[in-house]
Length: 592
Image (cartoon, rainbow, N blue to C red):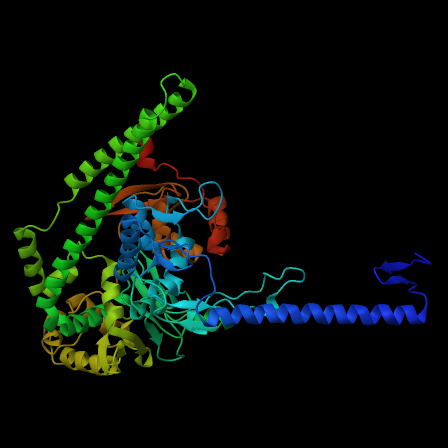
């Protein structure tokens, strides 16, 4: 645009003229400075009011703001008991997810005051959610603390034109204003700090929450070679756990630092934990009994308050219906439906309460209390009881141990554990793990020399095994004692004795393209167990034949089948595709 004029209450200006343009610039700069000063004064007044604890903010669930501006506990008793029960559940379960599952399982809803609209200030019962519970546990107001400025703004993360963005997660310790004992509290400040520490520990980059797996030291185990956390892996449908340090392999494609089965490590730690808990057995029995009674009393109180509220809503609907003129059917029909809905809800709650009372007794009877005390006098039995979950075992370990350093000594069966206990105490322990080969034993040279001397002295394999067991020698894996076949294999592998040649078994006349499993495995260049599993799964046609006193499998594989199997063998495992199962010759004969 050209030749445009700008006008205000003081005059008309031509931006093309130097004097007018200078005057407009001065006025704009002064206006901007004035707005900045006004905004700074208002913000400073807001901060000064916050430093006095007088700045009003929306209050969370469990609180109300009176007309005088004072913050008070929700006058509804059920709302207060629900908030207190949620904090008690977090002290027990230590994770938000388990608290949420408990609330959903027992149909416990959260009290929320409507913030606006026609029903402003009315109490609503909404289902619990993970964000609402996270906000509840992270808000310092429940500890009686007035906090302001918990969510500071990071200008590097702020988006242009959106002043509300760039805020960091709330941290009570970084609040601009932190005034304790200013509002009524549901919990103590010490409990609030414990909850914050537990939430930080539940993060994935820290210990993480307790898991349902069998690995006892999940999140606590540290590699003694590289200092990074060791992970827990599961196989055998989750029944067998294994600890491995994979951080260097994942980040830099380096070999694993160390890896071992979790069973011997967990057994050693279990014995240490039980030894540390023995002096507190009687106290634990009383605490367990008290916890059972407290939990059942809290649930019964929840049901009693819900039934009382349902009765009030029925009476309220009845009074509204009775106060309506009978001739005004337009209103009476609506109020009648509300009354019927309140009655139906009361009947539903009463039925659910009766079911709850049938399924769960009101309090532990004398027999249950005696059983609890009996269990706590035998801690190993209580630890191994089917009713003791993996999460409970891991929680107990985390209460006593801060971390555990694990080092496999020279890639042998010897493992060194360094336990860092809460309170600063450290203990070192040695244990024996199973290894894949006998040569990996740290005592292999001495074991072989002893077995060789016994063999040259004229002892048989069974006698050598018995002597080794008496002298507390142990094999590499699967069992704690030697037998004759293990001694024979040890001496044969070391070259002390010659292997016992096995003559070929007499097989009946073969048909065309039939192989034994050993012959076909050599032809394909794969392990015999792999080929045997393929045959058992039905991917290859075979038949059973008698070979002397035993039986053997003859597998049918022509040149095309062998070529196909070699291609499958050369394909990486994730992309292998075997043929559908085929019937064996014996099954074909039986069907025909």
